[in-house]
Length: 433
Image (cartoon, rainbow, N blue to C red):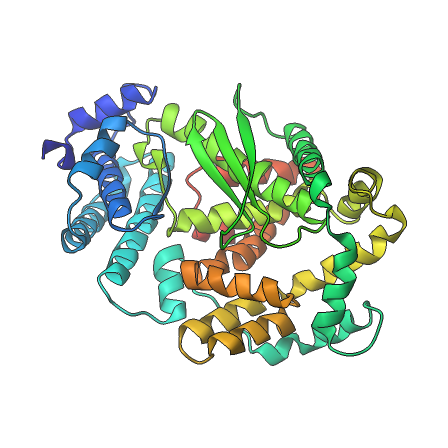
């Protein structure tokens, strides 16, 4: 089909369809053609693996063509190899600085496609190799015993004796949002995250989201980006939702997290520049490392230090019918628990590598992530579904945080750096600068 073998005329038509300028910068013609072919390949891969395409808002006829006749995985692997070879032949000297960043972004996205398609074909990777291939970051896995000192500190924060995970679970159960209060509390949390973000980042006109509560999902929250600055945010109610999750999910899924990132990429890159590769979002790609890392760090950026606990105490506790006088104790526990986040990478690697049984993984998550049994089982289900994707939340957060903090100590400087991260063709390598 001609649609699969894009020429510059197709790229030009795509740019016009997406509202971009008709003329690209010098030396970018080949990148335009590669980008169009990348979108077609990604959409077809999405037909071969449900969930591979997280979002798409490009021309409908391209999606229709992918659904009608997706190429076999073996052919898509060759296509990914072809695109990577073409990218290696694009001379940097003919590109503007922006286009050089675009090229590097595409190289990472195509490398991820090569890796994921190889996995679909049955190739096996170690946890570290898989993560590096998909997300352009090789994780360093710490031994679980290295987290014991953190557990010892947390032990002093939680009253009572006996198993620490059981005590933490019992303590946290005092902070569950009642079912009949869940929607107003979540909406208040999201509204606060949006207000804080709008102080620093200009959002596209008409941006909006819908909120829905769902069950039977392996994740706690999800942002389904629909295009035209519109998201559907879903909150999973399979397990009790703690008061801290209102701002966590509001910032992560919404502002300045996934919703903001997607709306800015659509506005600034897809529409204004005509970079069609940003009209499709392959979940297993470096784009997710940036998305999850910035979304997690966005919580701290919007509510630094004690600001999160203070807002919860003053606004959300009364709304949920919880005792504001106990907010500090709960906030201290959540802050301490955050240092355990990367232990989940080690557990995921051991479980996926066959070094832990499912029950051993559940027990390890209960001990080192301080999950309830239900929470640990839900996390194992997430690991089984998304595998090395788990590194994006903690390693991604740490790398985005360090990058943003290098911009300076002022709130304005840090928000400005964050805006660049979520509105440009940012790669994990960029975060080291």
